[in-house]
Length: 92
Image 1 (cartoon, rainbow, N blue to C red):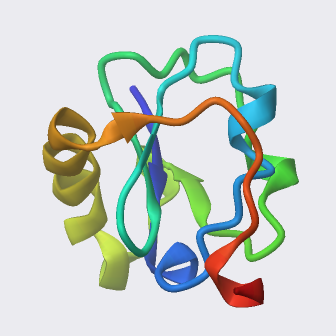
Image 2: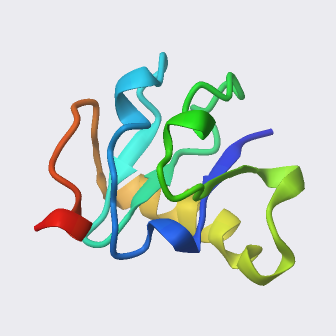
């Protein structure tokens, strides 16, 4: 099981979640973050840290955002890992 970054992160890319992740499973894309599904340990530490409520357990992912499960898996393979807080796109 894994957590998934969904549509509310697109264009915001807040990074509050990455600093609390104990396994460094977040990856930085151009417009949003992604969670590597095989690295996520389901600790849920990231969920309350997301100011736009974009992180969901895969079982609770809203139907309209189901495609984000596959997108996170694909993008986390090609993007760079992120472990430090950065200025979000919403504030650039």
